[in-house]
Length: 255
Image (cartoon, rainbow, N blue to C red; front, side, top):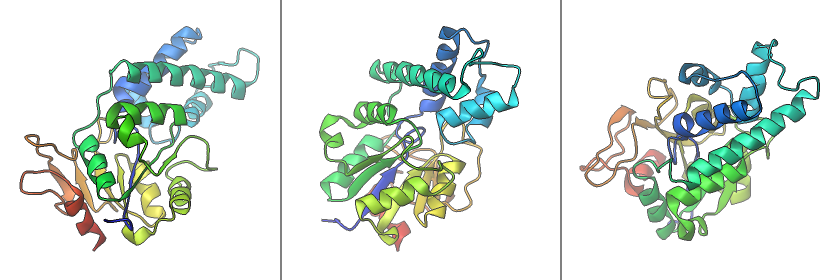
């Protein structure tokens, strides 16, 4: 048993490459449904992803475009909240429809960690409903029931790159930094893990494949599956000879 070990996953971009085919699609559909003349391009959304949290991204965009009045004379915060609720439901519908398959190696690694007695958790800036939907789709209900914690949405004052979500997760899990590994995909998420004093590896996603991760123990394209080797992009080689990242490889970053 390895009951002193903890493995924490980010959600978007880590469990599934959700941003391009999930959140961006859902935002633009919500804009259309609410009658707003907004359609984010992938390039625009890539910049907005530097802001942690969907509502926060929307507020940032509106602050940069004062000519757009999503509130139509009403309260902007209420309008943003309503837009985000509808966006989240559209996103969950996409997940439930199977539009966002899990990334290579995630289901395998979660199952392996749980079977070995590791604490497994998710820490994300996305809404709790969205995270639960992705987790069920990628990992399966049986393993979801064994996960030690899900930390998501507005449960902390400051979102990534602030360390708050990881600090909360560590407190709630009773975990120690020296025995915890985080898997992230974005610069804000990786910086949040670093600021919380946690070792982390990065599996880059569509929007982060060209980003730099100065504090990551390793940067890869994904975790690898039998017959689908992961590519090491930077840092320590945490793959086995077949190009797969498993728990034995991950533990090397803790020593």
